[in-house]
Image 1 (cartoon, helix red, strand yellow):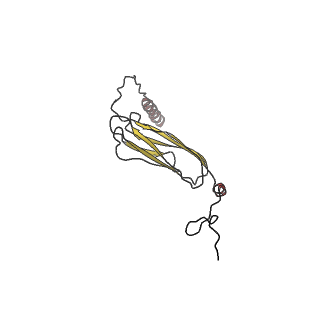
Image 2: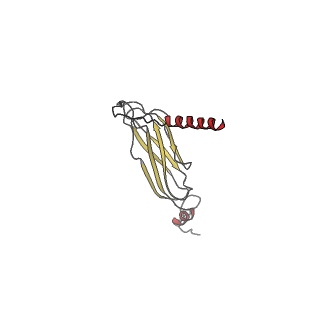
Image 3: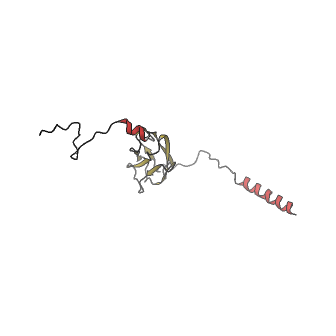
Amino acid sequence: MKKTILTSILFIATFSLNAQNTKTVTTGNDAIDQSAPEISFEHEIHDFGTIPYSGNGTIEFKFKNTGKSPLIISSATGSCGCTVPTYPKEPIRSGEGASIKVTYDTKRVGAFTKTVTVNSNAKTPTKVITIKGTVMSQEETDNQMPLKKSDKAGTPLEVRPASTK
């Protein structure tokens, strides 16, 4: 009796799971909303190159709504917690521009390539923008260039004239 019930449950579960694997086929005749907004970035990849430890890891990705109706960005998500995007919450009208600010935590030493996934109501609803670069170690940053010392007035000590007594 137990074997029969167990076999029946497995049989039903198998067919239920297979029924969920239906594929949607598009014919290519799907209507594209010609008045839909479109997000067009000036550039989708930014290479910081080599940046100092704890340096400036912020970049603004500028974009424009090249569609005919208002663009609404619903989310912008970094690929990890070290990449934090800030995006406009208000609609961007046709022909207007805005930017998405992306900040990378430059206290993480080494090479990096991170992405931000931008979701919107555009014809292409998902766009991916990328940042990459290499963060120097704290020792490399400290040894890169000597700091010029200055007095309280801000005058560099190396240039200050000798005092006369």
